[in-house]
Length: 192
Image 1 (cartoon, helix red, strand yellow):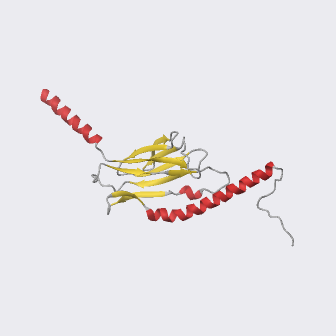
Image 2 (spheres, rainbow, N blue to C red):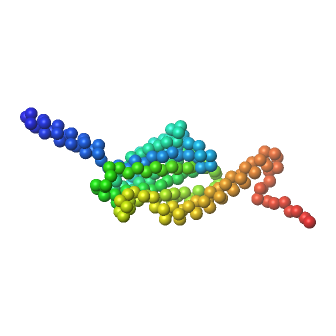
């Protein structure tokens, strides 16, 4: 009977030890405001694992967050707050081998968000802003730079339009406050 207890304790110890050494992906970073660079409190980071929401963390005063992901799954990581534009990234960990060369991968993901404005088209953010996947050639989880380069030009264009839209809205608000409620898109005709 004593030998059964010892064997059971040994097996339990090994199971616990192996569980503690399980491979993981440590995803962490800081969420900041796009234009000021200030760290943002209260941003929700939702982890969606194979289309099922698994966990939500909220940034503290310093904008920091961290999540732990497992190999073998396709993840979406969403960054949102009621007054901000929602963005997300996709991390495809399905191709990571059962026994990778290292005990974990670290991914430092800094995210910027900006204010939501009614009337502006944010559909460019319906797709992930970045993709990461496992590359067998380098045996690591890497950001897909080809995808990022393709998206960058589109997102830069959207951000230029966003800034112009904000400027137009501010000018219209100033004109309305001064009692000159005119359409800022109409220009005065000047005769020569």
